[in-house]
Image 1 (cartoon, rainbow, N blue to C red):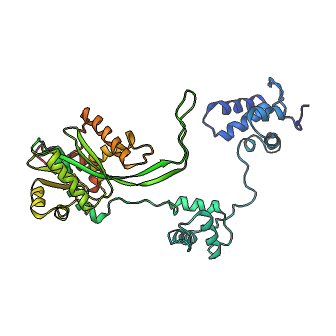
Image 2 (cartoon, rainbow, N blue to C red):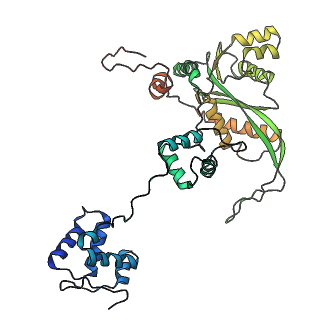
Length: 392
């Protein structure tokens, strides 16, 4: 006979019919269907159409040749059902090493602080500590992993919260003030201005870059020189599509006050009241005007200024951040080595953006926030659909 053939399987008509039914009905387990196919291919009775060797069967069904031999042997020695089903354990199952009490100890250890010198528990460190504390003397990393996963513990992962529970009321109160402001109408005599600050590090080339050529990308050396840091002040009118960005050596109270005076006296000299949206830095304050200018001048500027602060952890509410992002992508994504070059590039970018009057249309309203951010509201009462006059 062929290679690997030891004993003959001779199926009668009824056995062949049952095995063919199992192999094609789709309701049996995958293992049972596979064993039925092996027996059909091992058959050398009168109904067999082809004689298969163990090697051929193993290649056709992607099995090891020894597995084919064991299935045939079980059929010849024990019959059809034992050959189709999984073999029963001869020995009783090994009892689990980890009971409820031990698992509780592992959970407590996982939730505790890691050893000194380690930032967090790893699976290997946790396994070794379990052994050191004699919780279990012999345990594998995979076993620890299984029980850690079962209890949904990930000691190496930390989720950071943005807004603490105690600050929720403060956050939503300041957020709704800004959202209401965006939904109002604004005029030239009472414009809405959003301002934000950023910083840029000036860097120069150690080696001159190689310019772009057909078939060759531009090349810039990794090394660079540090040429100082500049503070950027962005003032943006989202309704008019106007912006002004300037750079200064510092971002102190005096610097902010000087930029605000320029906004009030040069950019919007005819405005009765400028509504300024900014983040809650200690420099963004009326007191900065009194620190930079004499009291009469500071008082004059303060009367023309109405400041609205975005909440802490809510800088996304400031439209000026969008414009700073555009500036970073379109203009600052390269090496700029001097203050003069930076000023020139900022002026060119600002002129081009203002010529197109690129605006920002804010759609997110207070009503939207009460639906989409309802998890931030300490007390949330949804509208009743049956009352058209119901309100939050």
